[in-house]
Image 1: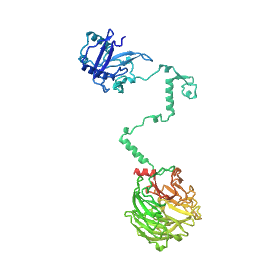
Image 2 (image 1 turned 30 degrees about the vertical axis):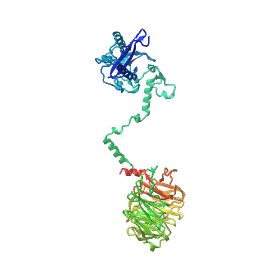
Image 3 (image 1 turned 90 degrees about the vertical axis):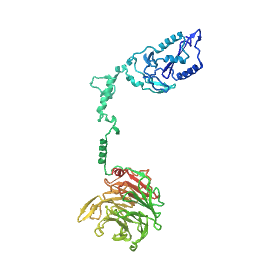
Length: 605
């Protein structure tokens, strides 16, 4: 057939159909002459049709396709059905081409072509047009008779490229999943493997179909799972929960939250250093928290006392005081409202510092006691009294309000250190160079109520510390606090005692726990304000620090780790709610750690 014979171009432009038909007469193509403006219209139509070639396996319902690739408004579309053989099996494929049946459109298109063609040409064009369209389908089409459309049939072409999916496929029948009839004939042998034998219902059953095999596997899984496969069910989202349900769950979590520190592991993480904004230029000798928990001080050998606001993220500097003639070795907040700081060193005097104004005053009220060094000092928890360990076993008691001594205690040997027991200033413990521990009741005319030998001590005791009050009990006619206290020895042994334990006839008292995790002299002991853990450290070795749980009397094994660089620990303190732990080392840093257990309790308060 001649290439010029029966040539047809289907064009869809703005909802109209345009046909150009050429016929061969004697090997020549005869066309009616047209004006130049007709050629311009023809060029525009050709550019439009270049983007919409033959659309096989395309589906567009409900209207025409405009130049934007979207669905238009046309209720007069026709459906043309063509039968095309498939590679696998013969199937009917629907190809839907939209045409318009509006009146007068053919005449309008003919005007663009430069008038009507000859009568013969019109007749042949009608025949070709009728052939290309095919028979008109009824309004209610039986879609099942032609099968389901493939996924690609719901995609139309946009400017010569594949465009977005059309919504037309939503109106079609959903294709069914593939099912091979041959699967029903396949059999699974139940006797070949031992794990399939448990799926048999009877001894004589040897094989079953694949569908039945799948069903029995599901039943076997349900039997083995106690939860019945409930873990695989989709959990409810927060949007599905009602406000009342959320309130009940939150309240239950608050009520059931344990306030006791876990004994197996301690969750602790490092935050920004306490003195990150003003590092110390010497070894940090003392770090203490204010009773409010919002302030903390750092004192070092660079003769400066710095006060910081504690927030765990920035820790800005609040005040800084430089003491020109005294390297600070011990400092703490005093008075009941902690509005005053007392700093002391290897001098016969000490300094009083006002927290608000940062004004420092030198105090020499102990000059008459012939004390040359006041570095071994103990501060009462309520801030009312200070105990200075002096020479010849004397312990001088000082009132923080008047800054005058109000009593002197005398030991049989050199006073190495002292500590207040409980949450008040009624009980004082002192450790002597002879290896004895003294308990003093300051409310009974400073009388020694107990004295015992520190087990394993050879006179090398370095430090003593006491925990806050555990419970109140009455002993005789006086009220005594029940607490734990610990002693640190030069051999690295830490003995933990109960204040209510009885002293034996030989003057010994058995400790409730002996901690031997350190091998160097223990010179730092600090109980948390909650009384639930004890921090022990030694400055003789790097990273020599451990935490003891006072409830079960066991050392936490998960912290510090080998990656926790504590350096040489010189001082330790905890905040009032025990959520922060400050560690001062020899590099001038006051490292700050957050105990997650107490930080979580603080968040729920």
